[in-house]
Amino acid sequence: MDFDLLHTRVAHHLETGREAEAIALLKDNLNDYQQFAEFWILYSACHLNLEQWGEAEATARAALGLNAEHPIAGEQLAVALAGQRRRGEALATIHQVIATAPEYARAHHLLGMILLGNVQNNDERILARQATEHALELEPENPDFYQGAALAADVAGDQRSALHFLETGLRIDPHHQGLLRSAGNIENGHKVVGDHGQLLRGMLASDPMNEKLHQDYAENFLEKQAVYANRWWVFVPGLATVASFGFGANVVGSIVVIVLLLACAGLFAWWNISTDQKTKKLLPSGYLNDIHARFPTLGKALRCYQISWGVAVLGAIAGCFVPLIGATLMILSAVLGRVASALILREVSGPPKDRTDREARRIYLVRLSGGYAAGFWKRVLLVVVQVILFVVCMAHPSQIAAVPLGSIGVGLLTIAGILAYCQLRLGFKNNAFAYGLAVSASAKSRGFALLRGNVGGLYFIGLHLLIGLVAFSASLALLGEVPAPAGNSQDSVNEKPKEMDKVLPTQLPSPTHENFSFSPMPELPEITELDEYK
Image (tube, rainbow, N blue to C red; front, side, top):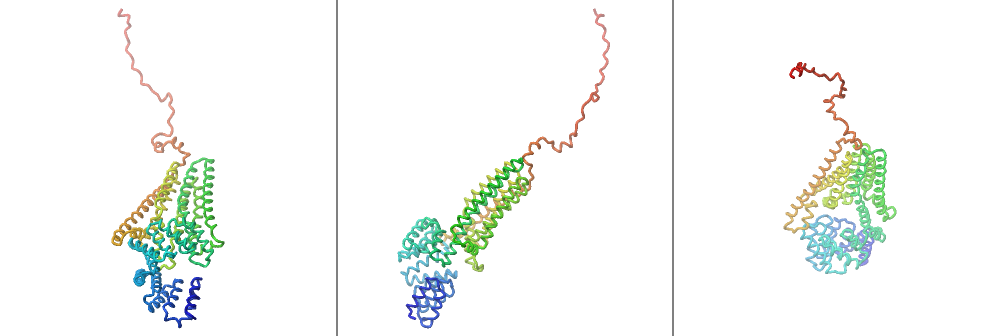
């Protein structure tokens, strides 16, 4: 077969996702073209598409053995090395390609992408941006390079430039999958492309066999499930506050409080069901089963939320009559809610399929700790709201008042525990707090930035741990108290202290005239009549 025809057929197979047929075709023509570097470049492209990094490296090296200065072969080798987490070798290879062919734009673009994959310091962040923008200068009409420039600007914190590159690239190719998919990772990218979920669905309609698009679409749906975490954190203490008015009330008051509890719980359930249906409405028919197959923990998390709702309602009703049982059930409901949110955030962070892959494990733990560290001020606001609910509960003292404090404690201790676990597993250099500061520091000040990040991380974890322990301990202390119903407070005032019974007789005797005696008056001397002195 003529090599040009072979090249055309292999390229067509690669474009249509038929890599196995392309490899079979190349094997059939191996004896004819194994002395051509371009033949091994085609071979390497097939393995790169299949993410078979080892085979891609071998075929790229074979091409370089035939032509050591071929820029495409060097580019393929760098990609294969990066895919095997051999970052240093990949960077050295692509630098060599740039030195050999400085006008080869794809080499500059790939340099920026490799650096962005795991930025170590601010110098690398600046270099990544310079490399991607230099590739644009060499080929200003290539939409791939606008994607790289947009991502580099986003990592550098220049949102304005990131959106500009995104928008400019989409003007050149409105259907460019790389740019459209990257829009979901760029802050405020929806301002350019609209809702990311609807965008991905449209892309799937035109390319239904693209597995990466299916994965992105499923992850987009999963991320929307995280909205329930903060709702549940406030729902249980709010229900407890309503229930606190029922303890010690008369029959009519208790009925009113129970009706109000059911109404509040029903409205909360309706709110969440509406959100869930709105999210599922965008899914193609039967796609929900595919999402649950990809993320098996999602079903368990949703069932935890459902059980938590039922336990919270049962506990609130029980708290109107037996506060200890009601408070215990509602704190259990808060625990179930945190378990559900933790399961969802774990899936959102992307746990590695291969637990032996250290780099994938590192990325997962960084994303997980970043998810728990984010939203600090929103968390402060939610804690303040729960403290206010606790104060309202204390206006009608009962063990139900332990629920808001227990909810605060469970939430903060969960965050502190997971962050501490990630901090220990990632170590001094790779934990999220240290990495975040190191990326913004120069190579010279990286060590100091790592130290500051670790100290800041320990302070952040310690703050959550301390407040969480105080709140949970106070909650347990309140559970141990046995308050009297509010309706009996007047009777308790009129009752005599038991200690007085030991001092005072139970009944005082009624006085009679026999109990009173008078000593006899002394006899007066006789007084001479006054007439004798006349």
